[in-house]
Structures are given as C-alpha cells and as structure tokens.
Image (tube, rainbow, N blue to C red):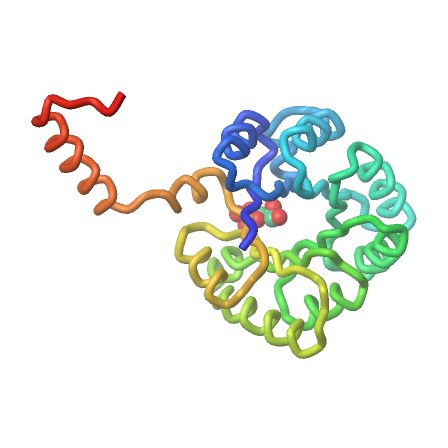
Length: 217
Ligand code: E4P
C-alpha cells in the first residue's frame, strides 16, 4: 500500500520524506490556502522533495479553463498529478489530460458509480473521501469495498486513493480491502507508528540495559 501525505506544508513533507515511507503527496485548494503561499511555487518545491506523484488541483469549473489550468500545472514538474473534481466537466478534462499522458487524480468522489465514471475517463487515481462520508453518518469504508469490487470486475488500472482518512483504523480497513493508496495528514501518519505496548516495552528494555552498565558502541 502506498502512503501519500495530504498537506502543502513543505517542512512536514520534508520530514515525512526522510522516513523513507512516503510515496507521494496530495494537496487541495484549502491546503494551498492554509500554506499562505503561491500555488506554483509551493507545488514546485514539493515536487522536488519526492519522486512520487504530487496532486495539484484545478480551481476552474468549466472544461476549457480546467484543461488550461491542468496543462499549466503539469508543466511545473514531471511528477505533477493534475487533480480534477468529479463533475461532468472534470471528467471531460480528465479524459483529455489522460490522453495526453498526464496523470489525473479525480477528487471529491462519494459514490461507487462516480468512481466507475472516473475509471472510464482514464483517471490514474480516484479519491473517495471516507472521513467526510463518516461525518454525515454513512460508512466510508463500504464505498471503498464497492470500488475495489467494481474495479476488479472490469480490470480497471485506476488506483484507489483513500482520501479524507482521519485515523489509523481507516488505514487498516483500507489496507485489508486492498486499496492502493492512503493519503493522510502528517499527524495520522505519525499515529501509525505508535502503540502503548511498544512505548512501555522500550522503556523496560532501556531501564534493564542501563543496569548492565554496557554500551554497544
Ligand atoms: C485528498 O486528496 C483531500 O485533500 C483530503 O484527503 C481531504 O481530507 P479532509 O476531508 O480531511 O479535508
């Protein structure tokens, strides 16, 4: 399973890249706004920190402008993945960009039939938002299970990028279902490392080691 970090904070991305566990980055207009930086500048910096795909989202809603924005964004670096919303114009843009060899991430997916459309439009990634579905009392993971089944039925190459994941249980459930990618806030990635028994066990080992008076080096 690939791990993407969902942020436009360059220092966080740099720290995540150093773990050796980072496979890519996702951003969205809200995350770019939070960074307080110029989009082209921050995307270029992020692209230099990872060889994996870096999702940069268009902000127009009509086909012609989305396509122009997508072409501009992909020109920033070879690992830019253009993100488009799951609308009719967005999927038309997806098809046009994919036909030109551009990686496209179709975002704001909340139903399995939407995911089917994105795959037919040539998306490299589909981003179902599990946390936002959970927030309104629906089960985000049921959506992931449905998409996994549909994509397997037809052999689509589109990767399922589980987005809006809020905690390690989302990652566990997505991995058990065979989703290709999970994108997470840096705090969620850090939470994956933690277990109270790991911390307690390490404390006990180090206390016993200290009693020996030895040092390895
Ligand atoms: C994914 O690409 C989105 O940027 C992100 O996962 C949205 O997450 P949120 O629902 O926590 O804003």
